[in-house]
Amino acid sequence: MGDSKTPPPGELKSQRRQTGGARHESSDRVVIRADSLETSGWTLNVSRGGLRAVVEDPLDPEAEYQVAVGDAPARRARIAWSRREADGQIVGLRFLDVEGSIPPDES
Image (tube, rainbow, N blue to C red):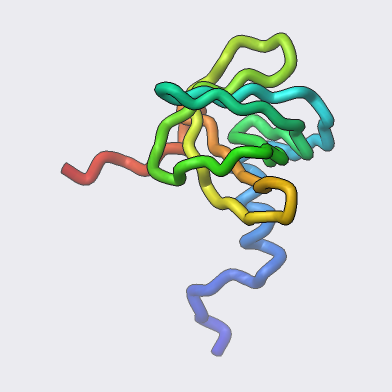
């Protein structure tokens, strides 16, 4: 029993935080663009590895986006998860320019 390979739940959470960095609550304007789509919303929190935001328009989980938070330059991102709400969508976006945020190429 003591040699289980599964770490305790608290340890998993801390490993995940270390990968993406500490989350900071945020309510900055965010603009998300891809091809002909442009939508905006508000951030809920931001970390080194990504952000969580509320947007009005649905986003394609397969698309790559340019994401600009506040006055900062746009960064490439993909959807990590999303949840539909009555008045829009809450999305978790992972930045593609952060080491460890892109799965290794298996080819």
